[in-house]
Amino acid sequence: MTFRPQLFALLLGTSALFGHSGQAAAQEALRIGFLTDMSGAYSDLDGRNGALAIQMAIDDFGGTVNGMPIELLAADHQNKADVAAAKAREWMDTQNIQMLVGGTNSAAALALSQLAQERKRVFIANGPGTSALTNEQCSPYTIHYAWDTVALARGTGRAMVQQGYKDWFFIAADYAFGEALQRDATAVIESGGGKVVGAVKHPLNTADFSSFVLQAQSSKSDIVGIANGGSDMLNALKATKEFGIDQTMKVASLMLFITDVHSMGLAGAEGLLFTTSWDWNLNDKTREFGRRFYEKAQRMPTEIQAANYSATMNYLRAVEATKSTDADTIMDWFRNTRLSDFYAEGQVRPDGRYVHDMYLVEVKAPAESKEPWDYVKLVAKMPGEEVFTTKAESRCKLWK
Image (cartoon, rainbow, N blue to C red; front, side, top):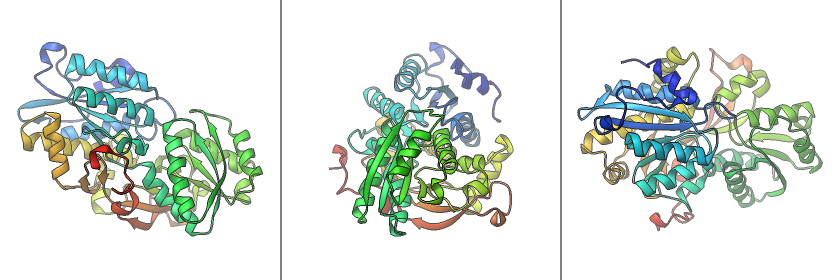
């Protein structure tokens, strides 16, 4: 089986369905629903190529499981929690989807997690960062698979504090993700003897960061922490260079992806430190998947897209092994099975956190890059037990 061109009609918002359609066919197939940003600030990180990764997993699995054809539904949630929840509810009612994959946007993911709990469906969150998914709003049906704001803060934030950057000013996205990232980074900074001297929040899809950067400049802090992502992060970094504050203060992006480095170019991104759960060039297994993905997408996958493949493949293995699509049965399998593939190795905890290693990486100088998309070098491998929320810190009622 190959990636079907019908998917592109689906991703444009039509919410069409592969294979059979209608209520009569609802029990005849295993359907996976995928909701992410397809057209906004975070679409480059996941988007259409996130759906491509899921379809690759379905095809590699063989297209069927326990005699059921596997079908993918995907749509643009437009970075709106109500749109995400409404579309997922419609799919549950009319197509009997059994598993949801949530892409970028924390507010949308929190809404989907709540709905999945109400309707007893498996929800795997790959793109959203908010640590609330495994803390205050943890759910017995949600797996936070790829990364979260705690891991980013303990990776990049801790590294910068250890380098002597103690006084911080934040430019943060004004919604659940930005708030969580600033909060979790603040805890790391203060535990290392630093302090946050100020912060400013900006709306999603901000084009002009001049006023925010000027506020950061006037703070006289050691470092400006950029707590956003996608095009917002790129615009913020561009503004720091335009106003020259990168010459007098350290600038750190707390969330960066390989596609962001590609957009900036190595000359513009050289030396940036960031935390990631995966890179295509880590080892032979990651390179094998990266090059397969490149053949289809003409670009290397982000960590989110790699996690989409991995999460889908492991879900299908769970269905095959248990001979069930019952959400409680599947979640028991995840919590009692050690996962291992090209993406990561680890286990899902009672709070829903998939605990695996994370990596602190640095963007290479142009002369260090050996081939296209060879953008980062490994600084440190960080055990998941050290970078994710511990049981003592957890606010999840399921883990207490």
